[in-house]
Length: 369
Image (cartoon, rainbow, N blue to C red; front, side):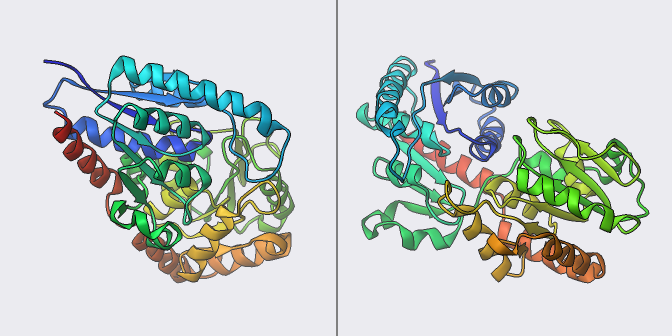
């Protein structure tokens, strides 16, 4: 029988990669009896993205990626050529593999493949992880057969003409994230269970603001909590590892155990951290990326979670040492507050989005033949 391909596209951050891999994980299980179904990924040229996808056993095909900017920049002129090159590269790949469907997980690299797929008559599904649709999703939605949103709130921000294409699915989270072992997490960190653990997440590249705040609050938390600090590949630990502090650049395979061991999570409010923390029912303190150079999606994510009682948001001027310490202290002093906040976060995360989306994909490709 002829092989049936499903193409995925997305990249730019882990938030565009890992939800896609969560869906692929479910597809492999659901379609296990059909050996003819194959999956490929069209992404950017970032090595970390290739590594993440290929480690899941998926063929990865990098294409040029010109960034989509909402503001004026001279780079917009040169990136036009990168976008055109990406379109033709993607079109060549799609003509070769003839996928039954292209699933976009977002990011600027996903736009040319979506338009290339539409030009070839290949059905397109696009998914948005954030509270509000980003530019890539808005562009991809014009060519998409289905627009999958993580939040109901996003529906009102898209044109009414797209209403019949919208499905509110939630954001996919890898199943392993929910199966962490707290004892393994503490052992990896070198911590016992005598004090609460605060897991500080700076992202894969590290967030300077969060790293500096971690250094500032560390002395104040001595004897009250332990800090597990993920500081990013381009940074270094703020102090030597000891019984109160463990710094690490990144944990490729141990994040589930670290989530399980954590009593409080502090980090940015990107969709990845938000949804994984919520899936693990953890109380979270967000220090969202704000100001110039961002569309404000993290601030929107954080403030939505705070209004729901599912997190604390320290956006903009509120992201100071004193405010962070006060927020941590309030949670440290009240196990009940931590429990309630974690439960509200888990309720927002909802059911298994990855399985629901995988079912939609399989239903659609059956129609393709």
